[in-house]
Image 1 (spheres, rainbow, N blue to C red):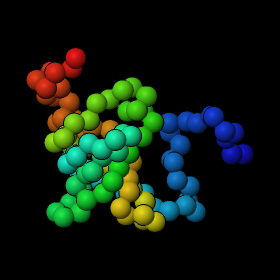
Image 2: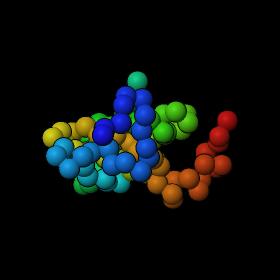
Image 3: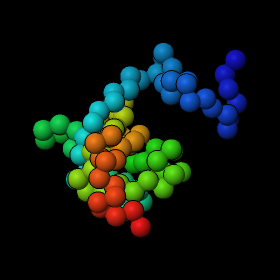
Image 4: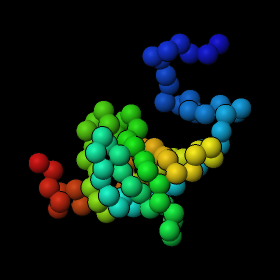
Amino acid sequence: MTPTRGTSSETDDPVDETGPTVTELEGIVLEALPRALYRVEVGPGDRILAHLSGDPRRNFVRILKGDRVKVRRTALNRTRGRITGLREATLGYLGERGTG
């Protein structure tokens, strides 16, 4: 039985076996754009437009230019992606850049 709308489990894979394949990449934020969009470089010359996924957005995570992020993108659209979190190396200097 499939879960009803509004219920989810963090252990469930967001893509079922029949859906598109999801690739998780690491990249560097090049530019912060309006409406929580970011231009991220995930490889040499490979840039995508990414938005914040649910958990970082709900917890008001600030992402700045130069941050290393984890990005998921599907095989259907290789120019767009979803930022799923900051890389651990970025979290180490949060105090240096100011937390508010």
